[in-house]
Image (tube, rainbow, N blue to C red; front, top):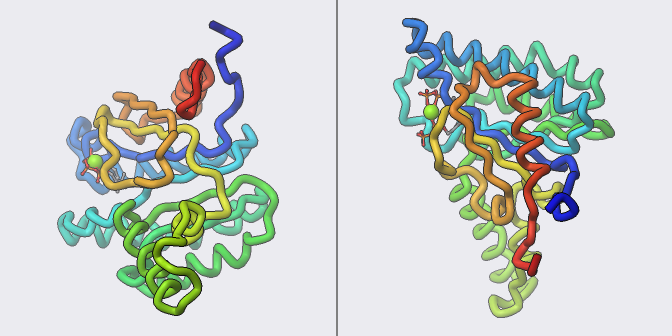
Length: 239
Ligand code: IPE
Ligand code: IPE
Ligand code: MG
């Protein structure tokens, strides 16, 4: 019933941007052309979400497992991240966007991690949308690094293992200061999480669309948000 609809914009939208390769293949183009087109779609969605006053937008750009792709594709993606960081950081800053990266930085080229740090520093006090980019990110990696911090603290005597709370775990994970995703969108028809946020998706509303990522535009995002707003979120409670 309509009064059950939450009718509220999602505070945090997370997107698994999938289907670049298939988009290119359907045009007899190389996979990298799909990534180029996917980047354009991502820039449009960032702009649109910022205009819509979405509080947090997370884009899954590269997973822990994506290193297993052909070296040429991985290198192309890395160069694309670098050139995009160089070209867009200032523009995002002007839009009051706060940029944040999540993922394992140890395996990335230092040229990239330096630019990531610079972008985070430059935009850290911005009051607009938080743009979180997941790069070399995996939900299992997030739990691993959280457990490492927790074990250091228990060994250091900060608390005993039996005193460990959900809040301790939350605080050790990648973005304790931001809300969990309300809406998870995955494009390209795949219906899986692919090791994206495992802990933080606990109560996300899931939205799957067959649209390939390079074709995902403002209208497609509006459709996802409209679907989300019709849903009743119960969080385990009774209706
Ligand atoms: C998503 O598109 C982009 C990344 C994972 C970097 P894909 O490259 O996975 O495209 P498909 O799934 O092969 O079509
Ligand atoms: C998930 O897409 C990762 C990103 C979108 C960055 P994949 O294309 O890598 O996922 P699988 O391999 O189909 O599960
Ligand atoms: Mg894919």
